[in-house]
Amino acid sequence: MKLASDFEKDLTTLVKSLFSSFQQAKKRYNVGEVYSVEKKFVMKMIKNCFKQYYEEDSTPITEKDLEELTNKVLQAAKADPDEDLYEAVNDAVYEFLIE
Image (cartoon, rainbow, N blue to C red):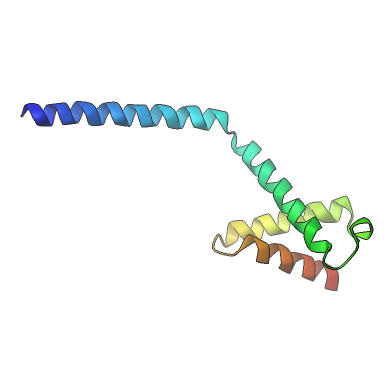
């Protein structure tokens, strides 16, 4: 039974260590910060997508429209996690352009 007891102690130590690491990581990476980075990334993807249709300096989108498009893409990604983000951005930009 000594082996089982040692195993339990090792397992308990491991679980405590993992839980502690998780708590530290949770403190380091605020969910709001992750969302902010994701949002900036999607905005950059949208701007790059517009480059297919317009020159960089003549992108026909206001900051307000960019914000709305970004939120639309993020909501679509949240609703369907299996959808490719690249496709969601391209679909949103295409819909914006044909409106």
